[in-house]
Amino acid sequence: MPDFAVPVVEFIRAHEAWAAPIVFILAFGESLAFIALLLPATVILWGVGALVGASGISFWPLWLAAALGAALGDWVSYWLGYHYHAQIGRMWPLSRYPDLLPRGHRFFEKWGVAGVFLGRFFGPLRAAVPLAAGACEMNRAHFQLANWSSAAVWGATTLGSGALGVEWLMN
Image 1 (cartoon, rainbow, N blue to C red):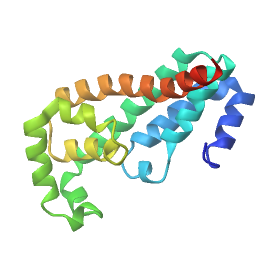
Image 2: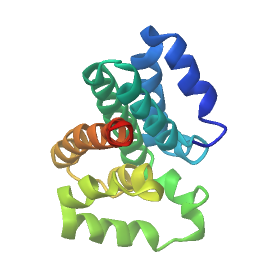
Image 3: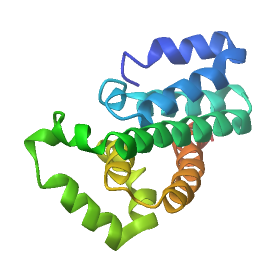
C-alpha cells in the first residue's frame, strides 16, 4: 500500500465509526471533476477493502457509502458540464482541445449509457466522462441510469477487490 494511504486506513482501523463517512468522501472526491486529479482515492479504497477483509468491518455500509459518494460526485460533475458547457469548453484542459466536446457529443450519441457506465472503471476517465456528458447535453435520465448503476458496481468491485484479496491471502 502506498505511504499516503496508510494513515487513512489506520485511522479507519482505530475509528470504525468513521469508516462510512470517509469512504463516502473519498468516493465523492474520486468522481468529482478536477478534484479527482488531486485525490488518489481508489488506492485508499482498496486499502479500506483490505481492512474489511482482515478486521470484520461490515462491507455493506461501506459499499453503500462508496456507491452514493461516487454517484453524487458524477452527478455534480455532470451538472457542472451541463450548466457551464460553454465556459468549461474554454477552461484548461478542455480549452487546449477545441474539438474535444464535439467529439464527446458524437461519442455519447454513439455509446450513450454504455459509455458512461464503462467510463467509471477507467481512472483517468472516471471524473471526465460525466463532465463531458453534461457539456454535451447527454439526456439526463440516460446519464443517471448509467451513473447510479455503475456506481453500485464500482463500489462493490473497488472495496470487494481489497476484501477478497485479503481473504485469499489469509487462506
